[in-house]
Every structure is written in structure tokens, then in C-alpha cells.
Length: 422
Image (cartoon, rainbow, N blue to C red):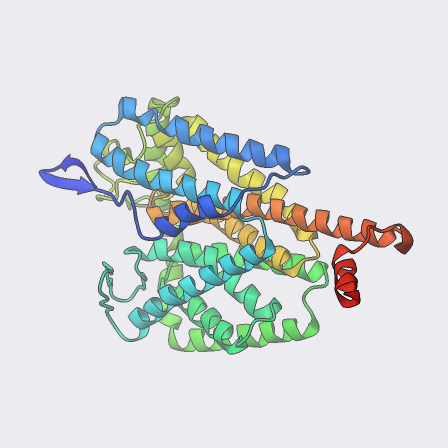
């Protein structure tokens, strides 16, 4: 849909995309269920998310370019719908299993493109606008850093399905895990590397403390880590060293106007000048200094949101994600492997995302917005799902505790007996 004209050209956004249609259909086909034990938390997250979204609407009052605001609002709205859909419809274990499988095979598609770009060359597919940047893989996501964010939120799902779930054929999930990890490496996104490593190590430690990581798992991880380290340090030593050697200059370089510190100071200037409402959603580029070498953004999602949606908007974002992470950790008490592993993967992604936000590219890129809010929605939905499992088990225990002579008659057996007599 064309939203307006900008610089003499029509400017638009995909108000409806193909993946929206089954989601909207499932709103009508799948009934929602309310939690009792976690009702307050889920309700508060929904309210805070709604306030965050409504606060973004104030951007219409102050936007420098309404057409650019409209583009950002379309994608923020879709992210909110994805969040609400998962928070209210992910209410059964089989739904969790199906969702994870869908995410894993979606990752497989993107990872295969990334590995092809890395090892073979440009990818050209019908219906996909793939930008082949050369030595860095992008998948279908144009920017390698955005591709890195997508991968760091998706990889926990695939490696957990391979290691802990009894899915067949096992080698398929092993293959997806390998190409997914290779694509993350091939994105050459330093922030994604470090964020994924830190968050994954944290949850591996959680698994170890809970006794879920057996000796064979530790052996597999040790062998895999050794092989990967040897191969990568041998063949890609120069590329890795070049990417990591200038981190200090990229963060605090005084000579580079695109250094993270320089961009952060420029963002703080904008925040100080527009503390309450910010400059408007997707409007940062019109207020950034001309000396940022054309970047027109800040490599820090928290500062970006504070600059565009005010300090209140940034606080809401931090509270929603941090609270979802801390409260969602209750899911790690679940004895159901599908709930436990999916929750671990979602929380792993949230933690990695929160870390990466400190050096992230534009938070408002659709792929980043959708996948980050998806994780929050999954946490809320799985809390409902875990409660339903608990209620069902309690009912089963109470039924077994009743003496057999006092249990309700099994009408199906009575009917069958009558039929046999007749």
C-alpha cells in the first residue's frame, strides 16, 4: 500500500503479507484460554504493551515525515499482533511443538541461503528481493547485522530440538543446527556472535545445574566446539581477527564519526532536546547530525527508542522485556520437556536480544521487531500452556485418589454391556 510520496517517489509498506493470513485465520479457529496463577503478570504485560503501542501513536503529532512514520507504524503494528496472537493462542503443548517445528524449518530456509552466499555466491530467487553484499551473508534480510539478530533468536530452538527432543530423522535437525550456526558465523556480525555466546552459555549452565546435560551431551559439545574452533581458526583466522581487532575503535574511536560512542552522544543530544515524546517513530534520521557518515541511526536500540518515543517509551520497552525474562524463568521449573526447552530457547533469545540491543542496528527493522516481540508473546502463551498441564495433572491425581467404588460410573462400559446383553 502506497503511504505517500517521499523525495518524489511513492513510499509504501506491506500492510498485508502472506504470513498474516493464517495468523488471522487462527485467531478465529483457536480459542484463547486465561491463566489463573499467572493472570496478573500476563495482563500487566498486555497492558504495558498496549501502552507502548498507544504511546507510539503520539508520533503522528510531531513527525517530520508522516509517510516514513506510516512505514514504521505498519511494522510495529504487525509486531504487536504477533505478540498478542502468541500470548493468547499458544495454549497447548502440541501448538508449542508445531510452532517450534515451523520456526526451525523457517531457519533452515534462511540458513541455506546464508551458507550459499558465504560459500558459493549470490542467490537469486523469485518473489524474494535478496541483496547479496559479497563476503557477509544476509539471508533474505538485506543487512547482515539484521540477519545476525534473527539467527541468534532462532538458533536456541533448533539446537535444543536436536539435543533434547526425540524427533526423527535426527540427522535433519543436526543438519539445520550446523547450517544455522554456519550462517551466524557467515553474517560476520560481532554483536550477534558475542550476544549468542553469552546467552547460550548462561542457559547451558542452567541446564547443567538442573541435571539435564548428561555426560554424553557435554562430550558432544566439547567435540563440536573443538572441531569448530580448529576449522575456523585455520581457514578464517584473518577474517575473524580483522573483524575483532577494531572493536575498540568501533566502540570508542575518537576519529570515526560512525563510532558507537559518537553515535551515542548524538542520540543523547536528541533525547535531551525531546525528553517526553521523542522525535517520533522512524524519525531519527531527520534529527541526527550530518557528520555520522550517512548512518542516520544509533547502534543502540535503547537510545534509539528513547530518542524516537521518549524516555517513557524506552522504559516501557526495557520493563516489558526484562520482566518477561525474569518472570518467564518460572517456566524452567516445568517437567514437560517441550515447555522447558521451548521456554529456555525463548528466554535465551530474549537475553541475547537484550544484550545485542546495546550495540544493535536499527531496532525498527521489521525482522528485528517481529522476532523480538514474538519471544515475549511465546513466554506469555507458554505460561498459560504450563498451567493447563498442571491443572490436568492435578485432576488426574485427584481422580486416582478417589476409591474405585466412589468413582463416577463409566457410562461407555455400561452402554457396551447393555449392548452385549441385547
